Length: 170
Image (cartoon, rainbow, N blue to C red; front, side, top):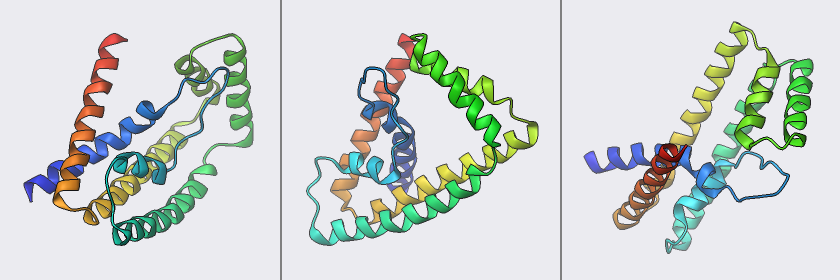
């Protein structure tokens, strides 16, 4: 029971780290957000899965992709069209000025000028999204053998260490 709990906690941590680890250096372009299915695919990279496991994981991804799409639809209505345009314009200007990806995102956030109500709604939407990611990983882990779960745990630990190392460098 404790091992499962540790694996789940580490899996959630990896979900937060995966987009950073997977990001490829691209000139002049911003990568869009990865889907949860992509993050699961990275988690399972290198594992030999049976056909039954692949089917179960595909079913989990299909189910959660629909739930994520529904959640995204709800969160899309939080920002006004003017706010979205202001963010896009600010990000474009920051990119053209040669700013880093972090500075581009910061410029976009500043341009939003969101209200307190919008902040709370966005926070709730983010919480829901992380909850869905957590549930997806839990369901995927159920399809794995204990040995495979251990391999995933090691990947999560490695990703966590890399992330901590990058934080120290900044």
